[in-house]
Image 1 (cartoon, rainbow, N blue to C red):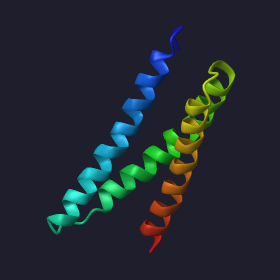
Image 2 (cartoon, helix red, strand yellow):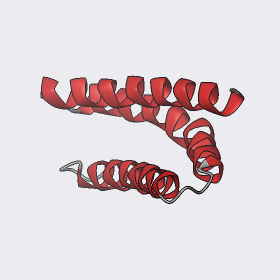
Image 3 (cartoon, helix red, strand yellow):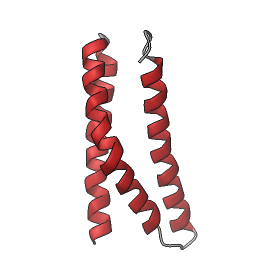
Image 4 (cartoon, one colour):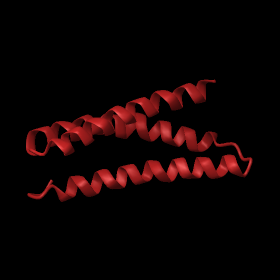
Length: 95
């Protein structure tokens, strides 16, 4: 992270944009009557292998370096949302 925190901000934005891309592709497949399973599995894999592992590290870094409570709360929300999203996707895939 640079002195202004821009590197972390840019990386977090890119990570979340990738999840948005996968969910948009899933929605498009469903609208077209195609099976969305490949996109759900891709979301599961990205969440399990990367985002759910990485976000606690981001939150810890933000907690250590940022004094603005808004960003602390935002990273906490992102971490909890990713965990909840993973659990929902796992339920969808298993059913």
